[in-house]
Figure (cartoon, rainbow, N blue to C red):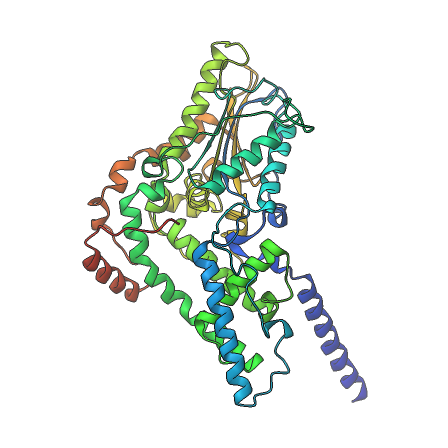
Length: 495
């Protein structure tokens, strides 16, 4: 009997130790969805994937980069939300004191807490951390592809493009300073001036297609209530847990704002023992999943219009490759043709572009999107999923498409390698490899999308025929109500 009891105690002790070790190993900064810092998550990649070995004699002749801006500060709207949270926390604490409730489990930092951004009149700008992320990325890019960046700078050789949103153009500048550091004569760092060009927000169909596509705006607005409906049960569950745990009458809005505060503190301030510590690791995983789910439905594979509208960007990438091949075949002199096209934009650019490439899918899922069939939503934790916001589009997240020229006796002359966040990534459309013959890349990945012209995809009349449910019959009802109310002319604030 004593031996049996001892065995039971040993099992319980081992489980407790294992559980504590798991919690200690849990880094909340790797669970912030698209609010994750690039430096924290860029090393996360599929360890089971074995990258291709670039054949001898193959050399890069052109680089396409599509990058998200670096870490940014909260927007003006979000700063106000945090101020409102502080006000409501004061009310809850006062009510608890009046009712003589025990607050011994309440973290001390909540008493008298004020938002770190209180008093800020502007927001959304690139932070110092964001500058560092892009500056370092520029340095690493030049070191990785020295043959591509050995020419003297000229805007026609190294085209740098950004949206008109300041955090994107600032990211382009930070990247360029790293890329060309030591190659000029300005200051101790021997920097040099370079050009960053932008299209008007109203007509930027390559980098801000989501702003120009009226069908997408209407679709997104019609689906937002359904997405909220999907998230409500989880928020309610976590809100109830917070009430029991801390004896405060938290609302669902409090939970939403505290999760946002957690992401801002952990990502921008590297503080993980305040707002983030209010939630258990399992609750953080659920909150992260809800953010990932929203990005999937409204920006990713949830609906084909999300990425179809990015076809002008895909066409621009392919066109730049074809021009590079013409320059090579024409034996153009160095410095007379483009060697890199570098773009800086937003999550709403990087996510659709990744979907156009078929990233983060297995073979059967890729075949579904080629047939324009819906994909299932990312599974709820603890089930594993490929679609993780911190990998798909963290701050500074990026896709590089490197065009290689191989010896004439090779099976194919030109290949495309895709790097996501600087790691080779498998393309289901290229039989799961990261190094794909250009002809195969164009035939299997690019061509199926080109039958969808941007104007026809984004014309207001097109999508009226295929508004299918995204979440449930309830979401279909929401969509019907909103389409009646908006007359397909809804506008959308900047994403």
